[in-house]
Image (tube, rainbow, N blue to C red; front, side):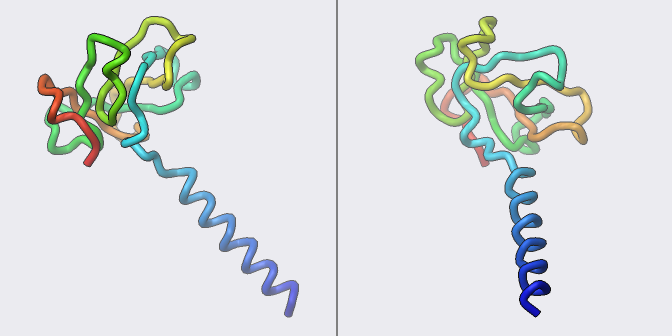
Length: 112
């Protein structure tokens, strides 16, 4: 009986850990972003939506790296060493970890 209880406890633990790993908290992805051209190098695979209403994250591109300090604020950097996150822009929504839409208005940026 003790082995059976241990076995079920182990299965429940593995299932709950798999669910946590599979989720992405898009609200924590902000700052300096480096865009890679090979998906195996990326921290996240991202699909760009045409409208903000279908995106998980609305992104405002900052001109200054120091202003990209809140969710939805991205500074696209060309220096991969300074980047907070590496992303790969995919053309297939089903392959993405989350979706974004760019906004021209800074106050509209953020997660849903």
